[in-house]
Amino acid sequence: MADISGGANRIELESQILCSALRLSWADEEEAGVFLSTCQLNVLFPDLLPPPRPNSETPKDLYQLLTLRCDVPQSIVVAGYFRAVRKFLRDTNPKDARDEYYQILNAGFILRKPRLRLSHDLVVARQWLIDRKFIPDDGTLERLEDAQERLEREPEPLQMVRTQPIQESLPMLIELLKYAQIIQPAEVQALSNQMSIAPEVSVIELILQAGYVTEQEMKSLQLAEYLLMQEKITMPQFAVAMYDERTQGIRMAESLQVRGWLETQSRDYDPKK
Image (tube, rainbow, N blue to C red; front, side):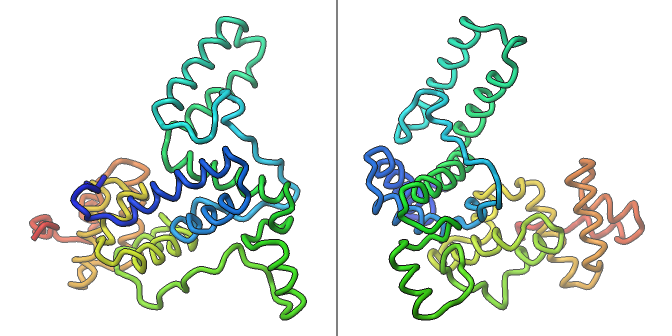
């Protein structure tokens, strides 16, 4: 993670501020604050707030399951999780209540991971706003009265939120992630929005921070970018070799060579150069 004290990463700083604002507003039941923070976070991370599924179950508030306030710091989340597990094991035999035990384990896993916790918060906060009739039942991030006025003025399909249009020309690394099906349109939109908001942050850093790939996989992507520019491999060959690396643990370069698609001397490439 980037060193925020060095002033290098506005995305990380903004996300921390907005996450804190969302959770504080939610804890204090301030609808306007929850709505504004959710909208702003959805611009930064549209991949973390998928559209509601028709006829799906109402999302569960995992904080209630662990008897925690939603605005507690990460360290308190971890402590609350272990406390809930100990209490359950002390009072109940897991064999007699497997579902309840798995729910606690799942809650701990999600809330202990910052990105999963944020995704949970956004989904549950959106449902909270729906239940309070602050936004439409379809989950559109628009005040209910504003949405009604817009529909009366100009009927059109509802969107989750108005965001920056995806750039026509994306960095090659993002194109490679798309082609290998590592990221989907929502993730592309997230990266596009983040690049617009903080152009000083490199696309490599944004991809790694989002956890779309590991550092080792990023080096393979950089190698693929170089090889494609040199016309030494094709996009389909890259996709197959990248799939090998992500599913079988075979480095992309090695897969290209074993399959006869890349000459051995291409190993000399150094992505740092």
